[in-house]
Image (spheres, helix red, strand yellow):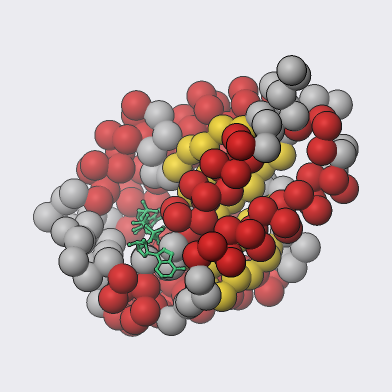
Length: 218
Ligand code: T5A
């Protein structure tokens, strides 16, 4: 277990800025000489990217469980092909969304029961959980207004109430796993948020084996 890396996930509603923060943290780690890998869900692998297109570029209805199972299938590929090998090689893995997205969107958003969802998700993750999860929280209207000019995907086009259920769901998940979650106010300036995310991550890494463990050998 000595070489085992550290998994950081970023979560949040549409337009919360989580991708900006996840990439900001990744670039900062690279600059500082840490071994780090970036991935995203749904996606991260060839199969995952195809599943992403099916889910987000569709103009036909899809059963909520079918949606959840496709997302979990994409997660299994991502865990097996990208996340697990990088962790086994001592990397800090940053993932833009992970299991909590399924609980927030398919559980709280679509109304699927959390217990069976969590059991099936365990097959996707092989039991893997993030060491640290940043939840970028903000009013859904603020997030949606940030992405207004874009061509919206299938889930982004959902009604406001759906996005509100997702936000509330995320906050419930964070309250239940206080040690793992770090909740950020997504309405703050991005530079400030990246700095905070970096400092919090460094504090966690120091506790989990020390920083040298995660640095590239020169
Ligand atoms: N999904 C996913 C599920 O339903 N279940 C699951 O299990 C999983 C894994 C795709 C969709 O899939 C669903 C959820 C999603 O609907 P995605 O690719 O993560 O997931 O899609 P989005 O959530 O849409 O991610 P985006 O990258 O498009 O948006 P972000 O991450 O919320 O925001 P970001 O960083 O792109 O920023 C949005 C805009 O705001 C600006 C940015 O410059 C950008 O223009 N911005 C800020 N503006 C002001 N202040 C700040 N602090 C800002 N930070 C960023």
